[in-house]
Amino acid sequence: MHIPDGFLDTKTWAVMGGISSAFIAIAVRKTNKKISEKHIPLLGVMAAFVFAAQMFNFPVGGGTSGHFMGATLIAILLGPWASVLIMTTVLTVQCLVFQDGGLTALGANIFNMGIIGGFFGYYGSAVIQIFIRGKRGIFIGGFTAAWCSIVLSSVFCAIELGISGTMPLKIVVPAMAGIHAVIGIGEGLITVATLSLLLRVRPDLLLLQKI
Image 1 (cartoon, rainbow, N blue to C red):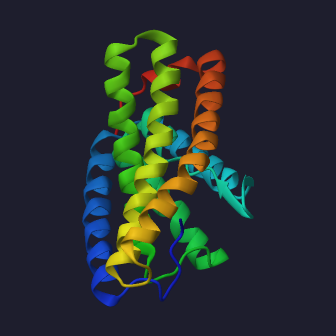
Image 2: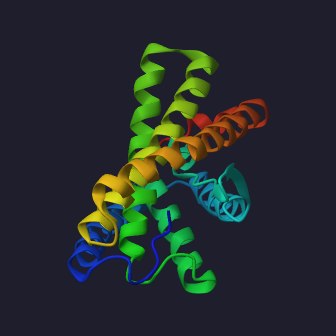
């Protein structure tokens, strides 16, 4: 889902870069106002965890592989704005150091994975937990939101490629959504496994004020 340089036309990557920059600026302001001593180490730990977890790919068939995105997990623990900041940091390092995603496409990648993934993951999980309480709601909400966030992020990525003329929309959208529907299962399982572990060893982390 990391879009390389040259796959988006100028107007698309410029617009996506502007939108992502606005979200990042708001996220910085909100984080500065709400951050507490408990948040600081967790922000670093979550950034390191997501960065490391994204290095491991799992096969999904047909020579294709996927990896953990992590935006939903971060958003559930810290809130959607913190997810934007952490995902921006992770994606920027991957782009500049590992050439995973292009520099011109960085804004689009942040939008797709950090903003769409984080906000949909957070609110999707929250809505499910309104109807399903307790640990069951946390797990079902976490899995469903993580799966949906992966698919939705891939659809936005496909639309951007289609608008740029890289591939026809009628081909790229179903292709991206289909393969990421499978990848989303892995995303959901990793999210639930992490939440389950935290509920056993550090349940207080799920009660932190969200950023």
